[in-house]
Length: 389
Image (tube, rainbow, N blue to C red; front, side, top):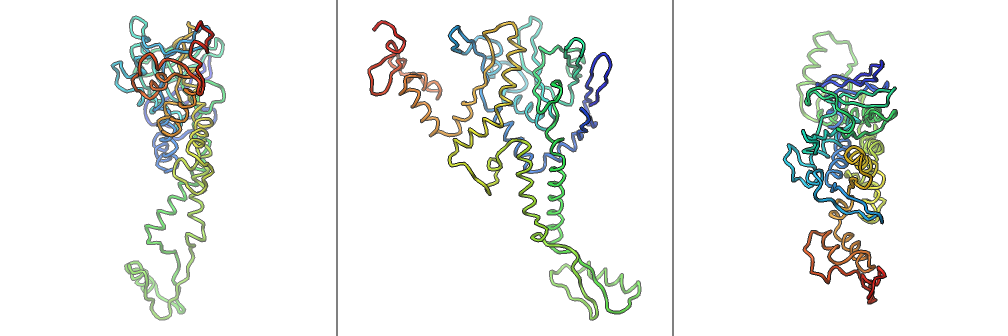
């Protein structure tokens, strides 16, 4: 990807595997990205974040004058969110692919296909390597191009653009670029471990005689040594072995690999415990851990999705917007927390029994289940709303 600074500030991305550069930070090619992704910590962080976001429910809501939001089931976008529209990918897979691009490349794209009538018919995932961004500084207008869509100009309202770290606000910068040094050390540690174990955990050393040897004798000694596969080797009289390597303990190989896991998690904003590092567990309950993950890792991306959809789909309607229900993910993960959460809402009169059952995808229990009551009181919905008894 390259920038051409003329009347249009243009960011070029090739559809192939060519290297690209953004804002003086050189990014590796797709092949290098995949090599970085092969690191267990990188793979686990990317899978954790992208899978968590893809499991959340997206919905179209309308806000009334009192600020209450209700789901708009008849909206075309809501049908897509519920996977009722005919398209190549489900909403779950689209969000997952977009987030993988965001984390590995810095940018993720969804094309909004409005059809000939202007009504949204489908959402289409566009690989980050296939999208070109052009920004006009004079008019503050951004357009996109994609070879899959005829290489025509796409206005900003047609493209959902999710960014990782961004400086000028138009393009995202890959997290891998900032973690370059940590990734290089981690790959070096992986390579050292691979070489150490592939060599049978043997330490390098030199053989030296206490007398002069001819070139033929040295070559014979070398061939004999290399051909011997036993752990304990016999040396001829007058030949000594001197270790010149270091053990895994001395080089702190295991400690280095463990530290790199923490370092990579720091760049992705993920608690190491969530990707299998149990060396330092600071949370007493799963609820606290999930809340930390939601607040500091997922929420910035959730807000981006909500604002991108709201301002590019409902830009002419102040009461309509897109909401991402983070509870749909967290509540499924912890049943005891879900039960406690719903129980408190029902007993405090905030939610009715039927509304709580709706959250669990259960059928209602009739009209009596619509009443809002407070525990240890005869207050009903009418009392709470100051209506006539």
